[in-house]
Amino acid sequence: MYRRNIHSLLATLAMGLAGFVTYQALLKPISPVPHSPVPPPIEQETPPRPLIPQHTPVVSTPNDPSADRALDPSAIPASEITQLLASIRGELEDNHLQAAEQKLTGVPSSALNDPKVASYVALLWNNLGLAQEQEDGTKAAVKAFQKAAALDGGNPVIHLNLAHAYWELRDPALNEAFLTRLLNLAPQNPFPHVALAELLYDQDHLADAATHLAQATERAGKDPRVQSYLAAVTAKVRHTDTVESRMAARNSLHFLVKFDGGEDPDTWTTALEILEEAYREIGQRLNYFPTKPITVVLHTAATFQSATGSPAWADGLYDPVLGRIHIPTRGATTDTAWLTHVLRHEYVHALLHDRLEGHITALPVWLNEGLAMQLAGDPWPDLDQAMPQGGSVLHLKSLEGGWGRFQEPVARLAYLEANSATHYLIERYGMNQIGELLTAFKTKAPVETVLHNQLFLSYDQFHQQWLDTFLHKRT
Image (cartoon, one colour):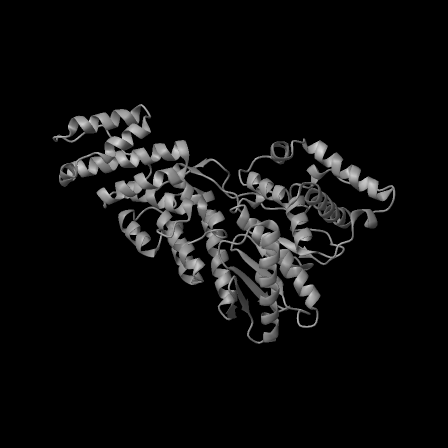
């Protein structure tokens, strides 16, 4: 089970188990393909402000037993291994994790026949997992959480911790049966409904996914930001279900294409062929392939804008909220070159979103758009050819965020600069270094930090190197 689309939104509540909200996603489509080669003003490019700021404390329901992830180990049950249990508790308190794990592994199986002892040992495994998670990451904690869950099948805190670990690792063990049990253990916790919604969404059961999102909303506390956030996601899923429920669908190995059945079916065959070629070629160049099939929705010209909320000038867009590429089919049957350009461009955006595990806003817009243009082979002119002598360029720092503030001449220059700077980056450092940069951006580090750590250059130095190369070509 893989998560790279709606996960970036729903992770808000998943991360709530750790005590804080992490929110990176956008609540409306981004990455539209402008009519090339000259884009009009970009009125909707600027991402909206997040509904939930980063590091906002989670609002739990009043009687939610899972509000704390650690369990109180103070009351050791009386038994023949009381001293051993006290010793393990001491190792955990002193953060001697390896010693604690060794002693937990050595607990006699006969002692676990006592339910109170088994429950307390499960508590210790749970707390060990939390300490391992903090020290070495989620993967290191899974074994401990599994041990705890096996010993105490009725503890909601333990099973929510295990579910959280499965979620973070995209482990297929977080399946419908597991989540159904979790619903019974923690009926007031929103997370099982969130996770079930994603499972159903991945199976294209949009109406059922929206139902669980609504139930998560009811359990998400009274914080208006959380309520607004979940309500927005729910509405978006329901709207998508309304639009796509009347569509037919065709699959290839790596894509699901949905379409209005009244349109020319040759378009869908052509689209799948273009997409599979993009999957192979662009994936090889970027050395990365999607973790799950990508959905592509082909709209009629009459319904594209109303269905997607896209600007009138858009040729297509990638929606990172629901992980869908949207394309209007106007001219697709007669202009294969146009269809190829748009599908490849949006596929790159989808691939980058997947590659950055939903943290696409950490990637500067000039690099996001530049990679889409470079890897898709967009028919844009070179900056030195399109820019008149004596013209000046914008600093790349000004092209990191949304471009909605730009008027047409500046917007056009932004696309040309993004294309040129990314071309220089690829030519100078190679695609392997591009992969390292993308990995670094996954940490959500500032652009300045990523360039310094990966290219050993300051932002200004990189900008000047690119500019010198560009100016040299003009002379």
